[in-house]
Image (cartoon, rainbow, N blue to C red; front, side):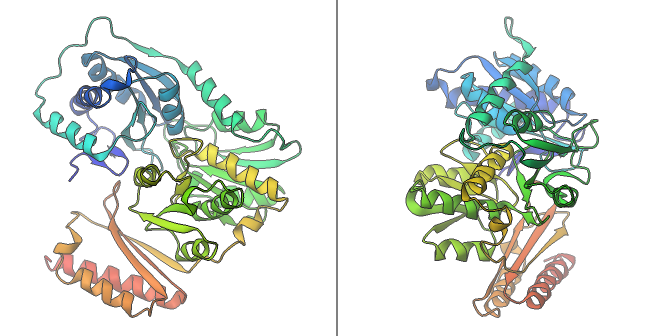
Length: 453
């Protein structure tokens, strides 16, 4: 079981363990030594690509990482504030040994994190994370930085990522007079997203693109989309897009101001790819948190849902295992694997926009494709993530409640991989039953925890 890595890298409040100088330096050193072993046959350069989001703590973390990277004999190449998928893309383009992103994604500004990409642009596997953790625990002192290594800034490398994004948008679609709202979450997309859409000819209304180190995700972005939705409707825009802090997520709005989440995007993309005979295996990868309405919609249209654990790295692993085309999460991580190895909010926005424009219909048609089942998501704060199977009677109780829904609902319980939370998801046809069931699960869990399980 992972000790430091969660579902998306190492994450904590900046300045608190493990995001402290000694650990971060050891992480940089040990990660590069293990990555070197794993990818030695790939003939990569001695460079490591580093990107960060707009958090105030990012620069200091980059400095600590660079010490460890250079001690391992590699060069740290910082591309500045840039989306997570930019690091993935540039790592591949530059043939770097790996990419590192300093970001806590959708979390508040006081948090930060460190995640690694392989030289192929995909998240490193859990087995490699475990090896890195083992080496960190053995490491007493990080050696001195090796002569001949360097720490440089090359922000111009992001130009290739901008050009890549624009190249994925069909040249036969004219965006002149197409009004688009962009909420950049005061995060990593604040420069790149407006640049891409403006250079493609769209009229852009840009929100939350003035990061100050403390306002990332602050009542804006992919987790707080009301402002974007309202702006889309009030400005008569064709569509609106919200990105999270590191811009690997997308949540959209139709012209009526109604939210389009990751499930809506996957439904539209999977059906489009199927119609174009580009949907490999006639399958789409979803996580266990995907709405039951989406699952049933895909099945009805001859598309088999493949369900994974929560986390875009698990989605990618399932896509790669079966060589599939499309997958993602309700939260907005979407992977168009025929185009990119990473979840990419801006790329997803471009793909969704092209699908809608080709249809000749408004964005509201995507919202109306299928009916979302009523759901209740209850986050329960926890001090300790006691394995659910060790909590006396808890899982049997959950199974019994699900059976009582008569096959017209489901219950998913899991611990968050990035926060001290138990997440309880209940879905079903009857909203009142859904809400009552979610409360029962939460109450039963808390009663068992208080009783010492």
